[in-house]
Image (cartoon, rainbow, N blue to C red; front, side, top):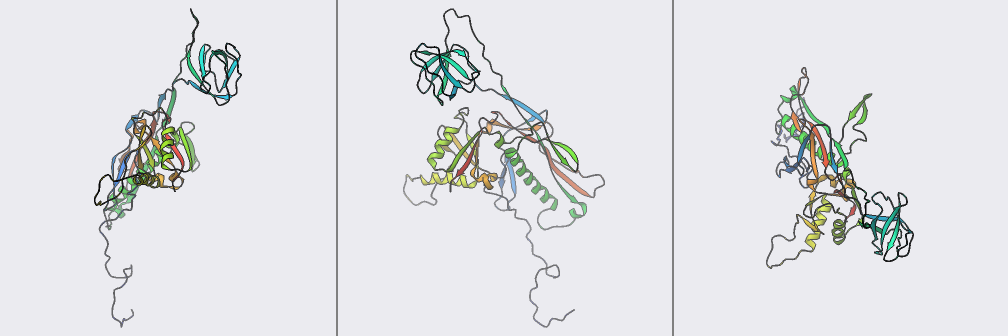
Length: 409
């Protein structure tokens, strides 16, 4: 042992030193407080002081299913408007040789009245010449049809004493999805559990962090997931083929994908969003727009840029923060989500109505915490978050819109 002949100063707090450590009595979690990481099953709120998460009601209501597969039906009204895929044959009034070429003539019967919406010329279908060609008798004038024209069905006409009719019915479309099985476990050796630690109880801390991790994963699944081509996907692990259930998420339901193609100003966004929202969405329904902070802040900046005070005097703050934006006939509510802060997702946004979705789970296997799942001989304690989850979209995706390539810089 060496003899120290200098004044003793404070030594570094290391494993070899004797000074006692001065450690805070709680751990500050650096969780995302600005953009929620979960919104579907549970909403999240982050403590301003500790960073600890707490959970509230999610955006979507839940319903159990008896099977792993759940189904529902959608019905689309009979199509009445048909783009011309090629130029047709023109004819004079009363002539029976006019034609219209469309993708499919299956919705038509003879005696249907048709109108070219470009020329407003009217005709009567006298024959279904093929699966793509209508033969038409011109009414009151000529008949012409160019590629790109739109042909409208406008009722039908019958001769006096008509005894001919054709029944037209359509069957609904079957939609389906599957529940996905998930497990998030945490295990702690008995000897580790008995050791004192700084901060909160070690076991409680691990479980709290695991729940937060599970919620983040489940939200990503409900947004990004895809169902198997068949009922399950076979995954070989350790030489054993295992059937895996996965559920279809919102982005893969989306039937309307609109490419904004670069820089967007406020006028363009407002008009384009209003124009691409499907007409099957009711104007009284509030549309949620999931987006990242870049798009959310840009929307708020547009509101502040056009904001004007109507009164005078000194103000503590300047600007506005809008909860809902009016876009045409629709009210759009921007909602921050951390997924849309990541990579290429920053230039995307997802629009939907919460009532269009239902969270599904296999009856008796909803999200739950299962305690003491360790083996009988294990010198440890293990708990897990487990359950099943699936996503049902009543519209089959017809009322779900994805905005792509939305650049605001």
